[in-house]
Length: 412
Image (cartoon, rainbow, N blue to C red; front, side):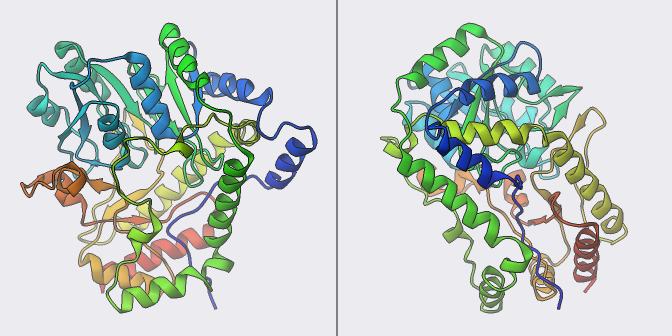
């Protein structure tokens, strides 16, 4: 029997348990020197002149950037219509109006033309989100921002390891955020990073973060435990006998369990107290060790994307990610369009390959942002996409199987 392949994979250090045990033994589980070391290493990885400040979440890194910038309350901030709901909600909780620009359904990123349609004199910032790890059209976006006097805060939650014209994403705008959650390109079992090349802004962000409470042992252990459960559950030898039968049954009954796997959508004002803790030393230890592997992890994932693409581009009707020559894709997710999508997804599941349909949000349609029924053509089109597993921990045999199963299912 061939084991089932999960839609998600986590990047895991084989010595994670030893690193955690060592931190506990040295009394450096919550606080210690490794947080500052990780900041410097993360900055060095991104490039010269970069300053990094760790936070409890990527969303909190964004919150701290907004606090440090002290932009006029009631101003507008432009987000892509296709993004994780929590980012525009954090902006709203901080006193700003989220405004949504449509996206290109092939790149999944908001377009410069769409930004021009929604930008006004009230706009103080643009948040280009490098969705799935594909860099946005940054030159054009930066030019629009400059013309209108707006700042650019890159959302790099999916994109650590991606480059635009030879530069790492996160180093192109006025500031940026990264996520260090379990399934992200760099996994420290939660956490985030605020990044900027402006030393004065970095000092302000660090000052805001320093005013937050120290991490609690309970919360940090909860993050580590949850991350361990996630990474074990999605391993093929466990996934095949736990989540996979549940997903298969739900698919057979035409029931979508996906909303139960994600955070509950709700107002974030006031911000939940567990958000407001500083980054822990044990997570920084894991982050330092993980940075040593990041280039290889990224390269292996990109190689898997090429291998799957080589097979799937032979199938009529499949639309694959196209990466412009001036940038590289981190492939946090490999998103494509399949003919007869729902039937193809079910056919893949029956053959032991789990595909995700969409786990970010078309925000203008969400009740929390007003529930507009007006079409958002590009973002609406992305709801027909699928995410195909290509993560670097899959063996070549497994990658070839994924490609073969998806190709067969798309032809059926």
